[in-house]
Length: 221
Ligand code: G3P
View 1 (cartoon, helix red, strand yellow):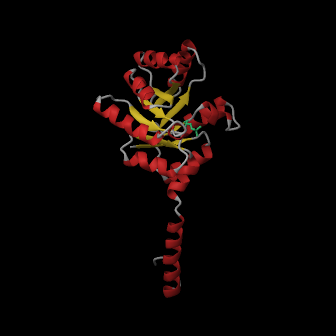
View 2: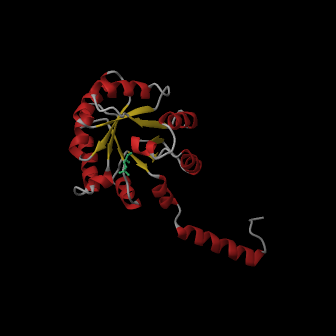
């Protein structure tokens, strides 16, 4: 199972990568516009920071087939391996996903709002499928649709991995991990909420206080 960070905030990436096992970083145009940096700066920071085994995902911005293909080649060439172009599943995007896979490029199908859209992108050979879980909840049961998608991919023997995105709560992430999702990409604030349980701090404080009161020190020896 791959746990990825959905952010272009290099400080947050470094902070969480020290503590957790981070399989990769996903970005999108909105995330990059909010970074306060140019796309070139963001991309170069990520390329410099990530280890070769960590994946990098950068989204195409052009809306037409030729433009998407040109950006797909550029993005795939940023690093020797583990670099993926994110292509939205519009008609032009679906066509580009098919063509990019025929060229041997690494592709993530994104901006997915239904299990059916995702399934069609899987048939086109997308390596990853990114359903927008919380946004899907505006149209029905987003988590349920992604659980359906997990089954659809499995029973049809397709190789695409689902990387669930667009989370708004720890519970949504939890439910999909428990359902067997292959990957998730999560914003740093939700990741912090997954690991910084206040009960843990309280428990550790109690252990240290008891030790200090009994032995007059806060260390084992
Ligand atoms: O990676 C893109 C996806 O996570 C979108 O998230 O928060 O804009 O719905 P959000």
